[in-house]
Length: 243
Figure 1 (cartoon, rainbow, N blue to C red):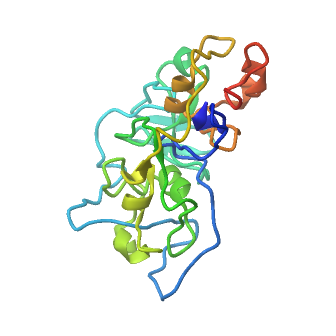
Figure 2: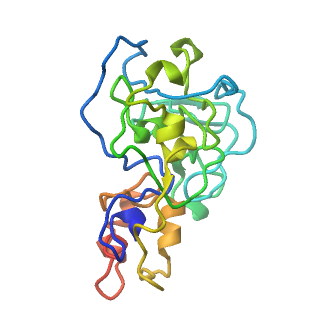
């Protein structure tokens, strides 16, 4: 599976609008830029983009495994969430939620899929792009700083200014990152192994849409560690990272 670093071409570099797996690169800053609080990220935008707060984002939210989040939930010792997806413990992988149906997620919680994000054969461009503060496309996705439509996400603090204030290499996140509506079509650079399925019958399309892996062949935000490893789900000696 190209999304998992495999594929017929053997080229690991095709990202399917995932929140994780972006390759980091040395920071290339040529001029003073605005500063976000520690742990923040940022990068491109347009005047038409609208800033949305987590509480006002509205609509039902789902995990990467397409399981519905509870609208309100509380975890003892962690806190209470009143708008489906929160990051009460400042998890580096972003917002998460308690799910309405544990059987759906195969767990009682899961990471939230950014609103409007769909799997496409897309590659971040320039490869290894980072913004002026060193944050990459993966940071924008996991931090919910942008939406797949190129607008500001629920994790963006309007006090940081605009994406354009963090541009680097002539790009902002909305032109460079797949999960922010940018990137380039890379469908001709890598092909999944035809008809491959894991031992449970899941295809490369499932691995990409549910973010079970990343382009390094590692785990994605949709994968639960209690499921074991990608190799444990291999079929006839071939895992998603090989197919």
